[in-house]
Amino acid sequence: MSDHKLDFDAVNASLCSGIAPLLFSYNKTMKRLKRKCWATGSLIVLLIAALVMRAFGRAITVMSDTRLNGMTIVIDAGHGGKDPGARSQAIDEDEINLKTAKKLQRLLEGAGAEVIMIREEDVDLAPSDAKNVKREDLKKRVEIMNQPQVTLFISIHCNISLDKRVHGAEVYYQQGNENSHQLAAAVLERLRSVTESKFQPKTGNIYILKQTTTLGILAEIGFLSNGQDLAALQKDEHLDEIAYAIFQGIDDFVKILE
Image (cartoon, rainbow, N blue to C red; front, side, top):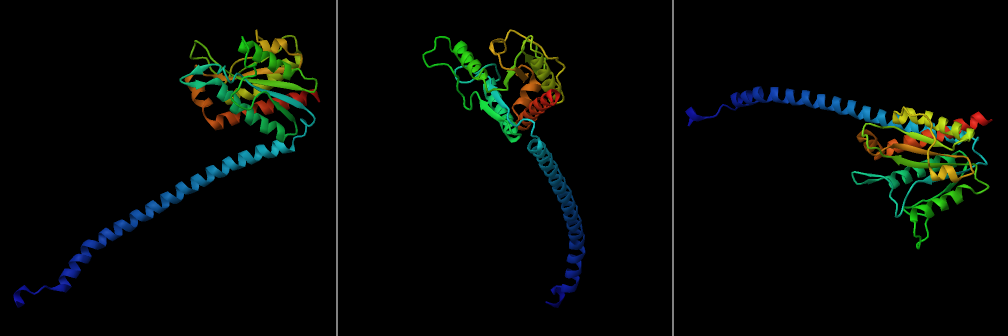
């Protein structure tokens, strides 16, 4: 028996010599992971803080701006109901228009303007028995825009083109109306950096712009036919940027008139 007795001191020494490097390696790995987690966590915190400060800065800008007090602004989210507007890859224009319109509504109301929304749901304005839904819907929109208390209107749409390379915002104004031209130029200037637009303000054969007597513009905020625009227009943060750009453009226009 004495020949087969285990030497526990030798065994312990052997085990310790094998485990020690493993423990050392484990501790080093854990420290590296902790440092990475700390760095990643810090980065996330910084990103969140930057986003919060950006939003807070915008809120302060809107709340401190009183130039829009007393103004009544109509926001027209184009299409809706039986008329979904342009469509690309199962994405309907009317949904994007409405989301953007609601974001713009909050900004304008925050700056003191009274806002009239043409629609706040997925509906059109045509009577249920209308034979020409499109025409009756547009006539009702024009009627709301032409109310005497309305200062100006913004009609929000998305564009589409056979040329998929075409991208960026376009803004249309009322032909022969210099104020409408200036408003369109101010809004488009703000939209350039958001949508990489290279367009200039333009006129067109657009029913709403031809039939309204109230000052207004129609903003095409991107091309659903362009892959880059389409992807961006599905992102809530991009629509925030667009709404804020339109808001800034309106504010810039009002400054010109002061």
